[in-house]
Image (cartoon, helix red, strand yellow):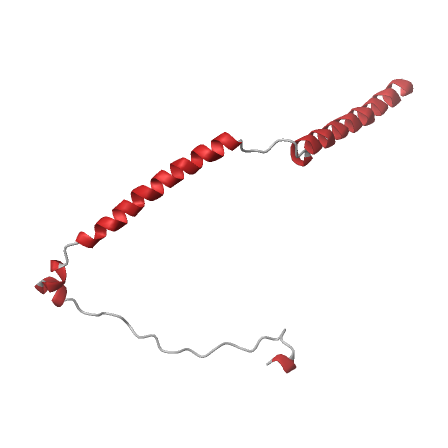
Length: 105
């Protein structure tokens, strides 16, 4: 019976060693192999074309902004707007930093 338990313990260690070696091999293959790029050249060029097309559309939208109606700024509603900003008074700074050497202050 003791021999059977010893064999099982030995098999556990062997199985654990095989699993660890397998995980190390897979992680090396997955992370460290530099053979193939993650993105193919064809997908990069097509994505660049899509981005370029989107930029051209946005550029056209910006060019059309010179036709904005500015009559709003002449209206009574805009002229009656009031500034409601609150001034912030300066507050005293907390205690000195104990980690700064005296020569740096």
